[in-house]
Image 1 (cartoon, helix red, strand yellow):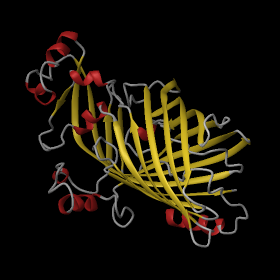
Image 2: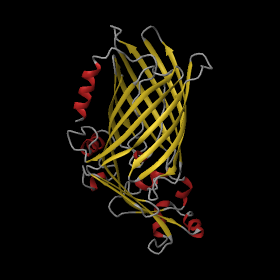
Image 3: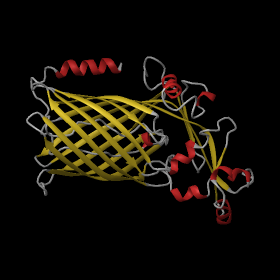
Image 4: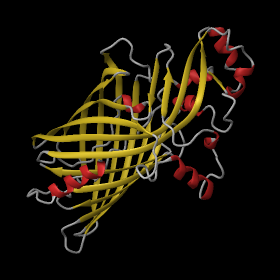
Length: 394
């Protein structure tokens, strides 16, 4: 179905009389990962344009990310004295110094397994020569990731890579559990449960971003800022988020055909500013999520000067979902099966997220971008994520 969609877009775009301004922006896909919690609220990213596109522009992003962490339960003591006592011991032995069955505490339960397929659609709407509006939709589908629909992101491919190229035999105890299954289960500290299984579709939300491109203050340095509104629409989180971002871009013309670009972006989101229902899942104890992104791109024109090729690498950093201070006294409990990564689903909620993305773009009458993304710190983002994005003027 996705291939048919892309084919139809490509066929249509070849007849377009308008072309994208290939020198106007850094070519990038949506680099926001298919994090099993992050898909339910708004997260922003860099906008590395020098000016509004000047026309209506449609951007369609298809993505596939493999997520996994074994079932784990953690206890959060309510009593201050219990917290102080527990904080004196390393996190991995705390379950042996207290009786969690009688402890006055809240609990968290996390289990992640499957390949998340994402579809993001964004429409650029020009307002004037200095500003534009971007309207987006994000939706996701949880799958088992079986071949051939998830050629790179299925469990078998990832475990083969670990065993034969990097990581060694079963470095995370992944093979102690059945492969190519699909289930994301989470119980928050208010005992509300989210349980998603194979084939479950999620209309996650809509996003509205207003970008302003003021007069350049420093010669050769492009600058824009954005204000953002996210409306989350899933049954697990119906709410409104707001955010802001600042974006910088430096373009260096190497000659008449080649260019080198650097992009920097910083911003953040205030999640759940308004809740539309009382039983929203608590996906994070930090209601403000900040990010930093940097991207480097090299572009060149083909000999015919009709096609531009771009290669880019992107680093994305995001602050932790949960308050880091809480990890000083939280009590993760081992499930008895996994020993190498048994705590990851819980402990990674208290760590900053970061990952790298490699991109290749081909621009003619439209821009087609292929990418692969890697979470090198293994912190609940997909172990590997791939995707394709097409962008064209209307």
